Length: 385
Image (cartoon, rainbow, N blue to C red; front, side):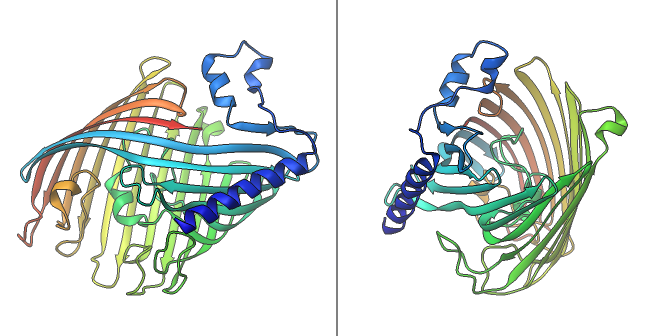
């Protein structure tokens, strides 16, 4: 609890200081939609966390309470048995301020609502970002490390109930890591690069005691050329200094991912090919996925996904989150998944219902308990502000 109190105190100080900089009382702001049409009840509700907004103020332009609340119900039926339960998938709260027109301050904490002793679990975001221009933003502190298709997508904006098993295996186990990054967009080009601490995990900034890793991501959006909303081709590369003490990263020395996202008004498809050079006992592995979607109505969306993974050696592939409820620490070496889901957008990604069925097959050449065939059904409520 001492850490939580210190983080909460910091957030309050941030809010108070930002309010003082504003020189005017903190007040709710109306959605920009008001200028073009009457506000909906959702516009009014989601404007409440914006405590202050004034682009004409030279010091403080915006102060917001940010967070997310994600809830899941799941059911499993497999060759290893059955299980069902509900969980608070994510519960986070924090503050975000925009200062001097170019500076963002973001502090957010993860709360453990199901085992609230203590309630505070960890810091997620705790960084300062200075945007020099659209082509250059410098971020310093604890921040999300974005690579692979789903690893570079916020959990608020996933169109499947959870990230793919490619992200679970290659993307790092701690999404939020302390480091320094540069990112930006210029024309159709976008990039993200940074140096991060890959040491042992702690609830705050990590211990920075067991190696570092480097990220480079470069992409180009061919959307205008192709006459669609988006046609992004992106290459991600991570070099991870192998260190037996590190538990913030996966044991891959190098990870390369090629991502393609094609999106139009009513349909789209995303795909990736990702490979990793294993270290410290982890086998080399690779995988690919393809995820088409279609908007049946303005609010209802259907999505599918096929995922394949293979490792050079036995026991090189982990199970994904919910299958892992039954499989524990077991692993295999060839993985197939078929997923079909529906999303109902009540207020865009800020309030939505998601449900999905998945069939998973894992081969286990070592024959040491990792062979698995199973169905899962997961339904979730996603709220973010």
